[in-house]
Image 1 (spheres, rainbow, N blue to C red):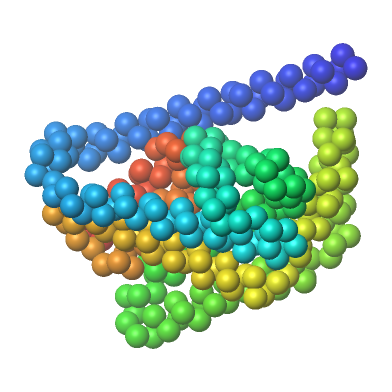
Image 2: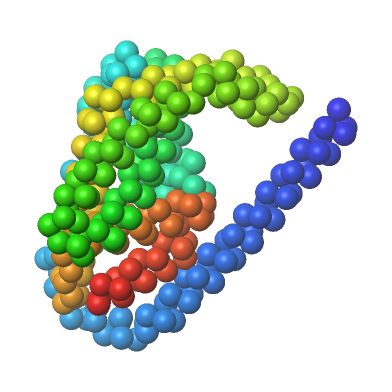
Amino acid sequence: MNRSLRGYWSRARSVGRGRLLAAIIGVALGAAVIWVSHPAAIWDSLQEVDTWPLVGALALNIPIVMLRAFRAQVIIRFLGYKVSFVSMIPVQLIGQTSSTITPAASGDYVRAYLWRRGHEVPLRAGAAVVTFERLYSLFLLVAVAVLLITLPRHGFAGWVAVALLLIAATLAPVLLELATPPALERRILGRVTGGRLLGPIKGGAFDMVDNLRRLLRAPVLLSETAAITLVVFVLSGLQLLLLLNGLGDSIRITQAVAVFATSQVAGILSTLPFGIGAADAILVTVLAGYGV
């Protein structure tokens, strides 16, 4: 028992040191971004900013939150549970806030607990919904960023390729799921949950994965989820576009969406709260590439 506890605390200290190092790197990146961006010039620009585009950018948070709440409602309904749209909105706000201030957006899983407490949605089903949303959205962010940065420069043919590859990306989880044997997934999950620490949740973890498989192999659900998610990306890109317009700069909406997607991927993969440093560095870099 003492040996297992010592091993647990040793792993915890190792993870803590890793988090601290990542935080230091993130803060350093953020400081570098501020220094390279010439803070004095930024402050002078803020004195001349047009407030109405900023108000419009803030107002777009309303439809973005509503669309995300609707997306979660669609996915939960697919698993056979009903949660009203009105109830979804505060849960989405709490989850969105929690995901922002936690590493790798892990705080978003608070939504699964809130659905269970308020609407009797089993925790394993709610966790599957959150996992599906997080993984699928990240995959679509990567796809959108890569496609919008690399292909539009090739004109009409490039845009046709963007459309076709987005359709392929939308349905790619079906092929991946069908190609992955369930026995392999269970073997891997069994090893992960085989220890004393995670052993008690082994049964629930298997049920969660089964629910996740159902979501990944449903092409209609994937299409609906992707459509809602892409609209959220466009609105988020429009927010960035309005902010730039307020500062006197301008880029195309497709470029704004590409900048948003790229910075979000960097922030999520950095595993830091708020995507400290990494998201800002990538955002500034991509904007500079577009001549801002």
